[in-house]
Length: 260
Image (cartoon, rainbow, N blue to C red):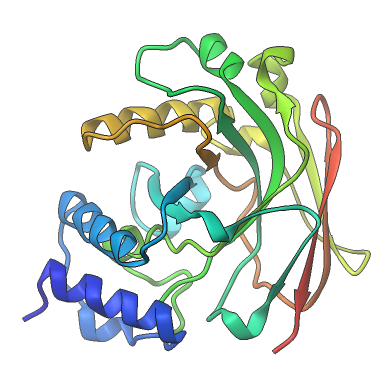
């Protein structure tokens, strides 16, 4: 019988060895979010590296529909997997990664529930980012059970952050007018708008702060949050990715992906 502790051990072994599991062998192992987050905590602790950030998943109706849920999910991310652009990662060190484009918000002080959107934005920096989801399971997207997604640190891979902008210089409305174009080796891949993220990415950050508080946690100063994808993610491939953000946040984030 699979227990939360044994599942955390299996996830850690798969992460250490980069040997994905067959998700069909764990069908029904988790049946609620509370237990899934308990497994996530145990899995994250085994990495023996501090949590330096969080990724928020399923922040659009399209991605929620894929995983049959009506709320986002979050996953703890370790420091060594949060990178500054330009960055390079290697497909050989991953399983079946995807590529997403998001906004990264980094806390300038500890963040607690009860702040208005304007107060919250003034307490963070904002940057464009590329997030690379990856799971400890074979053929996981988009069929992985939502509770296993949570247990697997919301299928966290890497977060690659662009140049931070002080949130105090932005307005909440500004965050709704950000557009991104993603290219691979100069060829268009996907485009999207920040309104895909719960209408406004600040809503995703508010959700995370509330959810962490329910789990007895605080979003600490220096923590980076990747707030949710602008589009349904395609498969990650080798080459040079460029995510060009326009609107109030104007910057290009670059990620080089080595082949297997």
